[in-house]
Length: 111
Image (cartoon, rainbow, N blue to C red):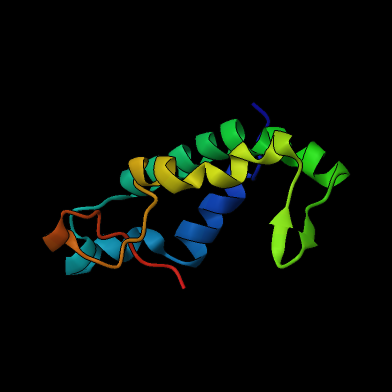
């Protein structure tokens, strides 16, 4: 598979610049490690490569249209936008605002 993002650059941004690997020093994230963060990135990369990348060219050639308040895309691309619904949750990419109390991964929430 072709690389969608330069992994060296991503590692630099996350670990050298943003110091994400220091999150486990905080009590809320103490059960996590850099290996956990890398595993999430690996899973996201597989998801992007397998489910979204194949549709990039088609989506560029037949751009989505905004018609009557709804976005319309060509049928060949429709599985990709719907994919995150249930598979995203199964892979652990759901909302993470609730901590371990609810059995969740307690990953940092994005804004």
